[in-house]
Image (cartoon, rainbow, N blue to C red; front, side):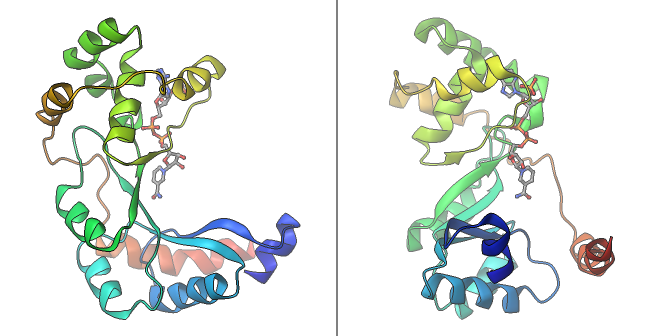
Length: 196
Ligand SMILES: NC(=O)c1ccc[n+]([C@@H]2O[C@H](COP(=O)([O-])OP(=O)(O)OC[C@H]3O[C@@H](n4cnc5c(N)ncnc54)[C@H](OP(=O)(O)O)[C@@H]3O)[C@@H](O)[C@H]2O)c1
């Protein structure tokens, strides 16, 4: 934390995350809590702590994280995890909110239909859906027009019926699968990365 703040030239950051439950992640989480208690991180978050990881953390946290960043989009809405998050008031932040640009998601007819109704693109309809789900949304783009469009989603509201229609797309299928081996491998790989 100290090194990060020094590099940034700041006295605090608004939000500090632990990226994934790799290695001795509880020791890492304790550092986040310390930073929060000292006012060096105004809020703290976890990322990719799903299933058994959040279940374990839930029994050990001293400070409840304010955010969790996980894969979420209309094909995978994190139904199970949201039960836990609602209990504690933890905000979901969606990564791969546009399915990493997957054309089959972006071209779902329901988005084109609603786009026509509201004068928006299909992507804007998807991003609006995220915000109405209560998700914080972080679409990636290297295109300045797309970035501008992605911010322009605050002047319309999908109806309950439209949200229900989009809910029908949920296949409970994620694009990215972490395995325990990958997480362990990441922990082993990381130290050599840091010396480069
Ligand atoms: N915590 C984690 O483990 C984790 C894992 C993965 C990703 N993330 C984060 O999640 C964020 C998003 O991830 P992502 O960029 O991979 O996936 P994404 O936001 O789901 O999709 C990005 C794709 O959507 C396209 N796109 C964006 N805006 C568009 C628009 N208005 N119209 C048409 N196409 C559009 C982009 O193309 P253009 O460039 O052409 O616009 C790009 O191909 C990033 O900040 C990333 O760091 C976090």
